[in-house]
Amino acid sequence: MEPIAISKRTVGVNFRDDGRAEIRLWAPLAEQVAILSGETTIALEKEDPGYWITVTDRLHEGSRYRIRIDDRNPFPDPTSLSQPDGVHGPSEAVDLTGFQWQQNGWTNLPLEDYIIYELHTGTFTSEGTFASLEEKLDHLKELGVTAIELMPVAQFPGSRNWGYDGVYPFAVQNSYGGPHGLQHLVDACHQKGLAVILDVVYNHLGPEGNYFGELGPFFTRKYHTPWGSAVNFDDRWCDGVRRMVVENALMWCRDFHIDALRIDAAHAIRDFSAVHILKELRLRLDELMQKTGKKYYLIVEQDLNDTRYIDPLHNGGYGMDAQWIDEFHHALRVTTGQAQTGYYEDFNGIEDLARAYRDAYVYTGQWSPHRKRFFGTTTENCAGKQFVVFSQNHDHIGNRMLGERTGRLLSFEMQKLVAAAVLLSPYLPLLFMGEEWGETQPFLYFVSHSDEALAEAVRTGRKKEFAAFHTEGEPPDPMADDTFHQSRLHWHLMTDEKHDAMLAFYKALIQLRKRERALRTLNRKALAVDVNSENQVLVLHRWTADSKVICLLNFSTEQRLHSLDRTSEWQALLCSAGSEWGGPGCIQSSGHGITLQPQSVSVFKR
Image (cartoon, rainbow, N blue to C red; front, side, top):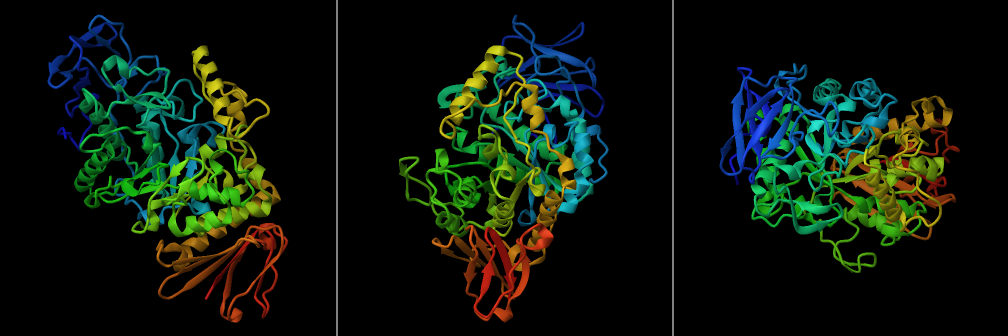
């Protein structure tokens, strides 16, 4: 692996302690490289292999600049830290080291204590900025979550985007508040005791404003991806690309004090190098942890059911700390009545949900009708804290044509039940913004491309993506302002009696998870699951050496009687049907057992 400075950023434009700018650009095929700033031209000198460098006092913090390679037209710096005028405007030189941190002694939480809240900065508040997000941190603290996860903030075209079309991996979206706005937000979160996870995209870049190809062979045609040519992690001149990705991860953790990175669609990263790029990220972050004494986590999204991603390095894995589990979500949604179409066709409901509780993966090597092949591997040696589960997230809402949240799709009682299914699991729970009060506004897919041909291609692509789920009607226009505005949270809903009751239930459920050792301890070995498919009842047993908790989940629309040995020895901890949560009321237990209300959960402790 190429030597990389762990303690400072070395790609792009950076500033030394003496105020001079240190410039290092990757352009392996260039004959000449220069920085243009106003009337100033700064020539760079070639340094093998493939870099151009200089140190200058003619570029200052706040200076706007472009790159010129050979005799081509100047273009913005793809490695810039700030694009105040958007993806096609000049880059801005920024010094990240000048921010005055108030919580410099912050200690990251143990991963097993993460209760994650995923949010989209642009729609979380009406203003859609980091500053307005800070004003809501007390709400999140009172809710009981311990970590927020920001959907990608890398600069994208316009001001409306999920973030997965980012084209400047190092630059923080200008309309959100830019790099210093993000630093201030992270500092504010740490002052509240909240960890921060940042969603990063290393498998592709967006189509508009993507100037990496101007630098050199950033992409390769060796592999085909859903987004076109793959990022070049193992082809000719790949070392410069790998360096940029590694430095990007180091920057977020070192200079922005991000606690964990969630790596989007890691299965789409094509790399047959001797050291996979994910493994290199792990090794480099380990070096940073040694230098800073702080802990940083790497969480991947991957749908291969392959534990190699989360297996430790000494066992031949990539050393990721955790991964998202879509299959838990799919099994849970089908259990609640979701149609078995598209990627749900592999899932049969409550039996598969029980398998997800036991094994994390539903498919651990058996035949997959949807994929038409045997799929998955065992998770026997994996800990509960290595899996992130959810009942909804940005993808599984936005992949619906009308972007309906659980608050629109499920009954009030079923919403509480699926929340409990997630928060009572032996895994890391993730909530999606607004679910805690049963938000009814959709979360739609939105973009703001300036190229109309590209915008039309996005519209066509979305229609194809929905084809497996919807056969009637037209999806909302991703380019329309109204599509974006519809996706904003309606905070005022919390004043409604039903929504307020939902919020109170979430708070109680989260506190229950934190308070009870048997629920807080993510030991997959201290777990058993019983299923009555006919009655649609799942019984989850969790225990430690000194306590045992039993969770009775009734997914049916009928009352169910569950036998419970020595009923008098069990203490009721929570009943989602309680009137305090807006439910029909819990039924007293009798000598015959526990009567469960329809679509409810009851939790007992021995």
